[in-house]
Image 1: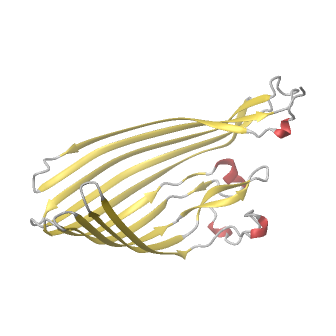
Image 2 (image 1 turned 30 degrees about the horizontal axis):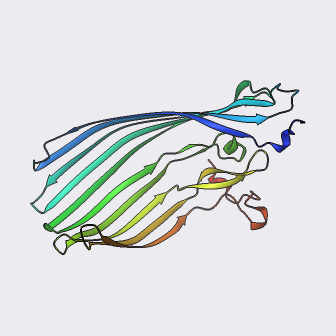
Image 3 (image 1 turned 180 degrees about the vertical axis):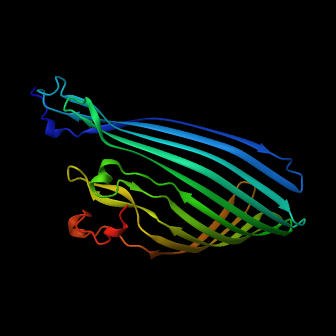
Length: 288
């Protein structure tokens, strides 16, 4: 039986990942009027990526070459805390904060036809620092009802796009941040057999990270991450649950969301005919 032509075989790949996390917390007496919590957090991730390619016998006697293509590392450390205070028996305030740092490393390797690693084609490391506060005010007029309001800030760390991003002018992307507001109410009904929850929220997002389609090295459509401006998301949510019997319950949820971009523009222009390939650039000043 003749050998299978290499052009009839599809390259494959696999990723070898190792991750570790640790968290330690110190908590005060939960029955006190003033309560507190402080903690430390650590996380690490290492990903080794390999490609399995089928080649002519003149290159490899087995017809198979295993290449070490890239290395990705992520390290995150944080200190966090919370202070809760009973202003009255019904009114409680919670103040929280988290200081974090995340570092990301990406290295793409150049391999010879026999799979031997031959230096870096891309290597970069970035670090992102953030402080995210959260304040919650809750009012409980009785044992069956709670009203609350929340103010918080959030962040999504940036990262690296590697060789593919470098070829398209976006080797890295910045962190995404948000400011969030929420008010709501929760209640228990029918002697606890039913619950209802209503909430309204608004999120103001800056430097939103979006997946952007680009052409790969061999013309195959793939994607990178880019920052594409600011957005505002607001909505209403409602939930109702009722326990008909010990073993049977029903539930109903509804959500109304309005989301829109408030600033920025798309760096790429696409047409249906091109299948999403980059055909132009209109906002070059936004490139990082």
